Image (cartoon, rainbow, N blue to C red; front, side):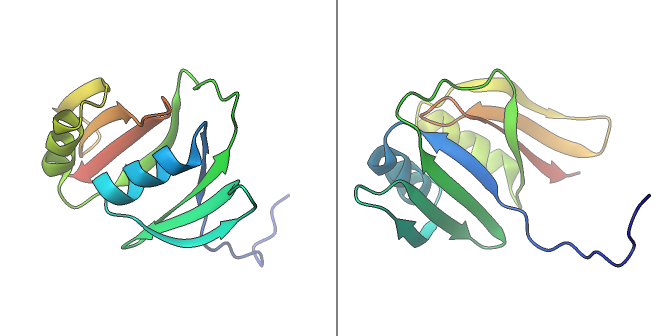
Length: 122
């Protein structure tokens, strides 16, 4: 049974990272996110935002990356992001292609091996 009165707001993906400083440098320095919150000493949790996107980083020193996508990002210029990922030597898991479901998309791994699926409507 569903409850039609429940309304949902923002959902933010949690990205496990082995090195918070390195992850912050990547997401802010390469992708342009801005840190809006951090917690712990040393920092064990961080919130980053860019435009309508929000990601949460959580320090997991023994993190082993999952063999599947942990997040899906919609962007305004998927080709530019693909080029940026290539310039920074990130592993492209699935190459940039037009998909039959109406997206131009690719999958890359962040420096911690987290797989992120990126798409733009065609």
